[in-house]
Image (cartoon, rainbow, N blue to C red; front, top):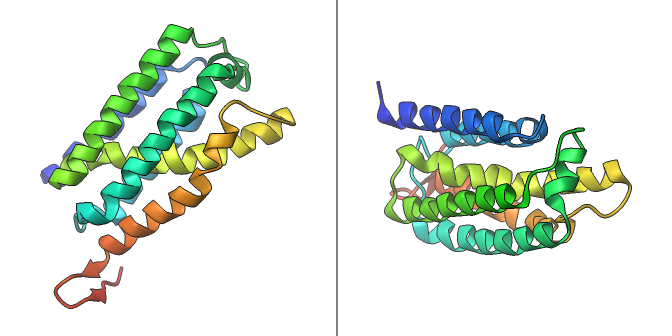
Length: 189
């Protein structure tokens, strides 16, 4: 079977298994696992068909990743590690676990930037998960969290930036994987 099909599916299974294992109650299961499914779907609709050109994607991806570091800082200093699982009636994440989990994720997302740059298709699930959940998911989820608590929820200010950056990167990936460079035409689905 094709490695461009198998590897992304195995990565998605591995990520989902990890989120089930590390989740405090349903917190990661209800939020991150749908992000894995969306990233896998987005992979098959885009990168699987055609690898995007790094110069079109990488600048916005790296900008989003830089914003994510600031977003993590906002979450860290405002108690996200215990307020987030509380939304799901779950125990808090120990601060060291919360930091280690995020630092591992950011390492993987930096590796994702290298994958984009080197145009390595099979593991592109990693940067696409960041785009679909780290960017789009954060934008949507933090607004929902604020509505649920009726006010500020840790991370909302920096997550709002993703309402601008998210659509830009999604559009660029979509267009890059749909454009036939040879003829300058959009490919049909």
